[in-house]
Length: 199
Image (cartoon, rainbow, N blue to C red; front, side, top):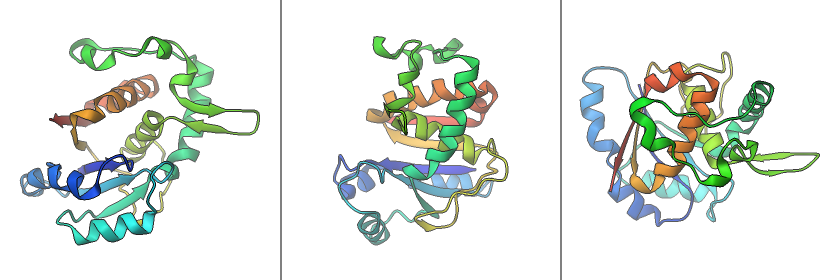
């Protein structure tokens, strides 16, 4: 099991974010049944603080993750996914009881820019949901043989049976978009990810 405590994008005071996270509260329950790796994703693309400062602050707080990794580390993997999806054709999909999670802004419907933040002839910058989706697929073993170097601690587990993500509800849109990307890649992976949002 891979348990993600939170994503940090620099928009909130780190101490406040750690204080409100519910991930550590469910950890003892999970550990009673299975081996669990805890992790935090740090947005090293947009955060105003350095990775070193983030790690140092996090280590002083009560949240003790096994792994802290940078969002940018998943860019090469997302580039591979993008090529795969481009060949298939882009589109937004929905499924049954999760319909409410797939409502999108009109600008996202059937547009490849759903995956991109920026593109020119030399480079692509992927959206936050795209990199989140790549991180989930990596941790579930989609990218066989790949290894992500952590910013701190252990390398993220790349063969997790399941993922549990416990996040504030303000991340709902990002996670909903990440779900749609995973659905486009292989819907079977969604059954191995559980999201819990709190106010």
